[in-house]
Image: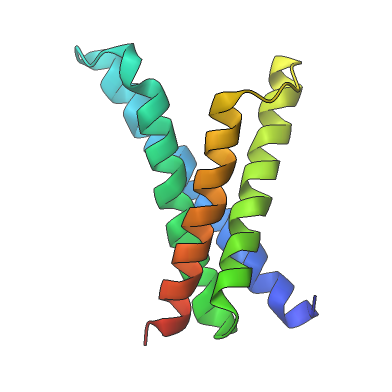
Length: 122
């Protein structure tokens, strides 16, 4: 991968992680101070992940201006691998379950969609 593509991809991943952190902090606050049931957590986390990766891959692909599918997919893949490694290290559990597989699919699909949008957005 060319070095001029690495920086925009890392920026996209960083934006996605930062936006996920902010959205999850807001969601945690809502959970703490309202009657929103905790059963909504899995759905909200998957949604936040998808939206964050979408935004990050749009930003990344706009800077690269070509190969949106590939670059967006890479943003999603790096994001999900980073989050998976951090959460696995913190939990001490490197198992992959159905929710992990769904998160991987959502991450790559959101990245691809964001990459397409980013390349075609003027």
